[in-house]
Image (cartoon, rainbow, N blue to C red):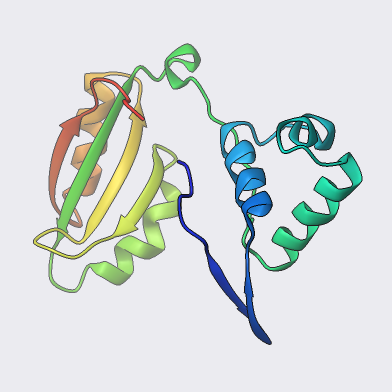
Length: 152
């Protein structure tokens, strides 16, 4: 996901990320394991300068974490779905407390609109989906969307 505009950060005063910081972020978004040397070749910048800039981005909490992308199908979880749930009145707190007990949920967000929660869920198969939905209906009315492929 390229960053096309300058980002403003407040830490005691306003400081602006320059085009080098933005390029470093773009490289890390493509490959969070890229070495300082590899990033420096693309910028171009010395490895030590890349390290200092990344440290600054981490200190400012612009870079909050590094992650990896898994091939869930190769791990036996060939079904990926988006599930939106319209929670029953009074169930938001209990659902938010229970969400970590569902390892199938890979990402979840509170949203506006007719549904309260949007989730990306990874499951083994249709039976697993059915069992997962049976757990969710204790909290609200789920709507499921099968992911056919990722475009971006």
